[in-house]
Image 1 (tube, rainbow, N blue to C red):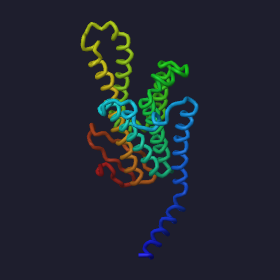
Image 2 (image 1 turned 90 degrees about the vertical axis):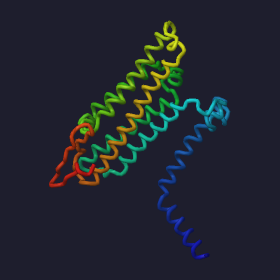
Image 3 (image 1 turned 180 degrees about the vertical axis):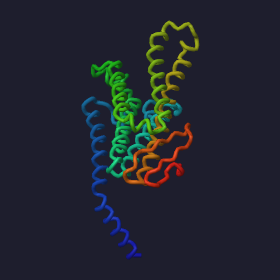
Length: 259
């Protein structure tokens, strides 16, 4: 029994030493966010519980409040993690360097949009800092455009139908938000003025866009890992579920069959 305990403690110590960088990262991230909580509490006199407890508990609202929005936040987080994990397992050499950059850029873009959705940056936070909502939307649009132009060659080799769907529904959600803000006060339609249809249309379109983005991140992550495992310098293949299955041949290696 004593021998087993010593072996366990010895193994634990070895793991601790071997994973010091990751343990340090955990400590750093935790310190940053906990420090932010303390700073906001002291500087703005915000109660600690309002910064640490669940929103439903703090607001004393029904557990179903914000149901669709909460699911959307989970999807944003999942999409970002899929891209980041895929980038982390791909070797940074040959043509894989471009794929790795693409996945990391997708991670960053997803985190930005997810944080905005979670904390209403464009609607609540940034306007208080003097940045109009229109400027924020324009910045996001420019960021998306840069992303599409910078990686268009890779994107065209993926199932880009999903990113197209995501952009269409995000655009629809923004258009509805803008249009309903003008039409809503004088709308002659009872259902529209009650807010039932307007919220369903706007938030429903955004939710479909988030799900489409999540599926796209899953697709690019999965196929990037498959390709990198198959051959060190092979480029990201063309793959599209809506097109007839294609075989990618690289020096006699058939990849298309393994889908």
